[in-house]
Amino acid sequence: MIKHILAISGSLRNTSSNTNILKACAALAPDGVKITLYEGLDKLPYFSPELDGEGAVPVVAVQDLREQLKKADAVIFCTPEYAFGVPGVLKNALDWIVSSGEFYDKPTAVISASPLATGGDKANASLVQTLTVMSAIIKEENKLPIPVVRTKMDAAGNIIDKELETALVQVIRSLV
Ligand SMILES: Cc1cc2nc3c(=O)[nH]c(=O)nc-3n(C[C@H](O)[C@H](O)[C@H](O)COP(=O)(O)O)c2cc1C
Image (cartoon, rainbow, N blue to C red; front, side, top):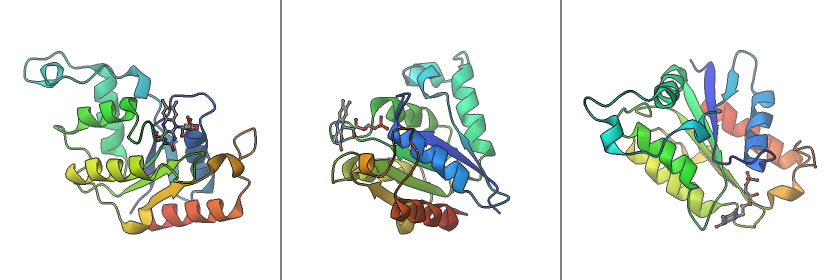
């Protein structure tokens, strides 16, 4: 039974539309399901296998990410697309998880949001590919690119588009 979902945004911007979508997801979660925003993306050092191998000094921020992933029954990503790819900060976080394996069998949703009509579809597909090789479970209905996101949110970051709200509720429901 899925009770606790970890939400990971691929944007470090204070007013990020992707982070705001995850905050909206937290508010849309059904009773008994808690969605927590991961806030350590910018605390992670650049990944190097040498920092992670035998005899390496454990990195607190990495241990925290792994712990949060382990405790989560499911994960929701919402990421921008940078130059047709996944933002480096997010890919860096995932590189830390390749060897420790916290995504194994983890129900996962991949949302991307962009002011463009593509909805960040290339970053979405790339993130799906990376998570799939890490053995995450990603159902078709849990892949959601959100096009023209700025028309769907107000200046304060609230969702003003009913269709988007419904699509997010469906993603959460299908994940749960
Ligand atoms: C370095 C950079 C590269 C970008 N490349 C893309 C891109 O390839 N595709 C796209 O849809 N948007 C691209 N954008 C626009 C982002 O989608 C837009 O800034 C978006 O609002 C970022 O998400 P956020 O609001 O969550 O920070 C790029 C933005 C930056 C800063």
